[in-house]
Length: 449
Image: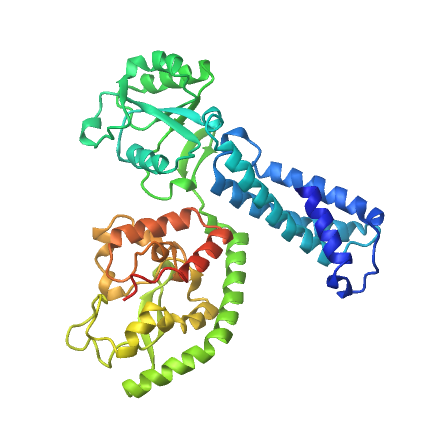
């Protein structure tokens, strides 16, 4: 696929209408073969650096796809910079490198889809799945099990769990996941069930039991994993570091704590905000006029919301309710068939038209295109005490749309579920995820009030 992408980019650059772009003369295939070979080799090396060729990730399609996209982006920028800095002959075409990156992304992802469908065929997938055994049982183990069970082509085959003598009975069990025995039977189970991985979920007892279990896994060449139950949020940010020679486990950095990621997201926001304002200007003007004709008064509505790190800002909307809608009741959630709405308000909310002026908030840097939806201070003053981890969602800029919204959680919906979606987004952020959410936003309007 890397070689085919290089050849396709060469053909597009020098044998289509694109040959008229720039000052490059037409190059023969032989003249460019060195660039193509170097590009293909380095692309494969970058993919290997991203870790997509390990057997234990072959079935993790989403993770692999994100790594492929990230690797090709890094390769495109790096290959162009290196070839220009070294002044290779013949001179490299910038358009060719960009085309090579784009075609490589399409071809590699396309090939991976075909390859994955072959791997998931009966008889093959079983040989690639890692056979895992839970030691102990708790809420985190059950949540992981339910998530893995939903994926018919999961990378893991969960065999069952063993009782550690703790409080497993206080957590509901799944009848399809059997209890295979007690802790002292782990060694026998490892042998009889060909276990590849032991995941400790809830181990009660002396420290020596954990050490003994770890030694067993080392001796039998089995992966030893621990679900860190004492951490409830941002588990993906857990890292092991050494302080004064002592290993310490803790939450360190999230994806959006990285400066390059912040800059990339801001660049996407600026581009999207400018394009969004230009494209939506006629729509904003039209519906502003309709609102003014139905309810004379200001057509734009400013409302105080909480932003990143709890700093308040004024969000801008096209007014969808009558003037002074909350004068008698005070601040309250918008509900289905809200009587305070204007006639045009229901239509605007269903199609998210009232949100279009928020492109201005994005341009100013108060919001992002994608992120947790901002809430009103007076409605959420007590939520940080009532809902676990509520304020953790304010580690990122609020967004015009978000992971919770495309999962149907907006308006008068379960706030706890929305918080879980927001935290998942912060842990798993990527530009690719932002683009997916923006695309899916156009197809998720059913719960808009």
